[in-house]
Length: 279
Image (cartoon, rainbow, N blue to C red):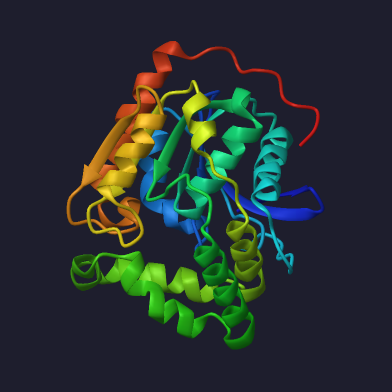
């Protein structure tokens, strides 16, 4: 593990591979960067440099209580890239991580060489959704994260995955139980106030890949196709029988789609752009 002190916090991250072709992987809630382990070696072997940070409040990155708006998460990622002297990246995110990727694309479109969105959606939160996010945040602070982790595991993975992939189920459960309740609650409060990213996706000129599982409790085929329509020229990969974590439940299919996408970007790569002076 490496660390970087930026924006008043210390970010824990892993970095493998070399070169100017950089893939930035953004984890979801309530997980940490270890959720991307099945992708690291495959991407490195494809000739890419891979960067996996823990978000503010998660894993081995500083916990800041209160509320963490999505623009703060995006600014942390930009500051980490500046720290590493990285200009533009292919950026990928799952669930909440996908929405943070969209916020990054909204704020720093010139730094997005390609985008991969997994098990996520661009719409802003409904009033009911805002109440729900804040109620969960209250519960985490009141009870801790253990009972919540047990309750949501069946939503995070397809029932078939829990039965046939016990190691994956254990990993997902362990990540959730290791998450600091204050960090997770702060993220949920920020997530409740996120804007719509539909206009951001419609205006994004970078190549895009969307990966969604048919057994995802939070996304639908209709929603995925709507997102595909916003992202001009994007590819949608629909994985049958897979739940909310396609990269863990079906790593072979996920990695094949990811490597195919990355390979398509290499011939058209351009010299890295200048690094922003501000994080």
